[in-house]
Image (cartoon, rainbow, N blue to C red; front, side):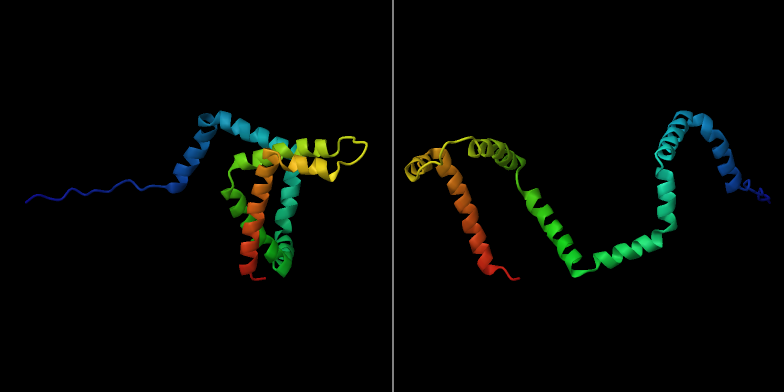
Length: 156
């Protein structure tokens, strides 16, 4: 009858494997290691490593102070408002903002231009009849109308 062949796989020494990988790492990753040293030196030169060491040492105190301030009703409202504005601003097309922000400097320049006397009511009425003014007023009225509709259903 056949005898089983004893199979003894070589024992794996994880520490020895790690040590071998660590010894080979500088040669395999020399460029990355040098870049990391340059980054560390830059952080040290600017005092950021000392700052980080101080933050780590006082992390419990800093975290406690931040949590005390963040748990106030005002902070909770501010965080909720920021999240709300993030959602609102994310839903607006960037081109719309560009249109508004391009118009502001031009409008401010025209409004602050040196005039001997302010325009009369008739001159303002003539300007109100222009298509660009009517288009802007329509947009403003649409926004105010929507605001009023939501205002009546808002709960403080």
